[in-house]
Amino acid sequence: MASQPEPSSEELLARIISSLQDDKAEEVVQIDLRGKTAIGDYMVICSGRSTRQVAAMAEKLVDRLKQEFGRLSRVEGKDAGDWVLIDTGDVVVHIFRPEVREFYQLEKMWLPAGTAAQEA
Image (cartoon, rainbow, N blue to C red; front, side, top):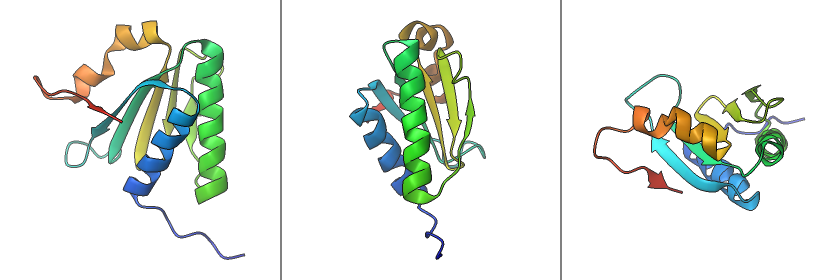
C-alpha cells in the first residue's frame, strides 16, 4: 500500500475549515502562527452550540483527517465536550461551547493588540 503524500499545512487548514463548516461550526477563526511559535503553523478556533455538537464535530474532523490524509491527531477534552483540543501537527484546532470560548478568549492571547481575527 502506497503511503499518501504529506499534505501541506495550507491543505490541512483548508480541509479542517471545510469540515467544521460542513458540521455547522460557528464563528470559525483562523490564526496564522508561522514565525510566532513552534506549536504549529495555524490555529483554528470555533464554537459549537452544545457539548454534543462540540464532541461530534471533533470526532468527525479527526475521522476525516485520518481517512483523507492518513493523519492521526491527538485529542483532548472530547469526553467533556466543553473545549476540545485537536492537535494535527501543523494545525491546532480548538472547538468550544460559546460560554467556555468567551471565558478563555484564546483569540486575544494569540493575536497582537488591535488585530482582528481572520474569519474562515
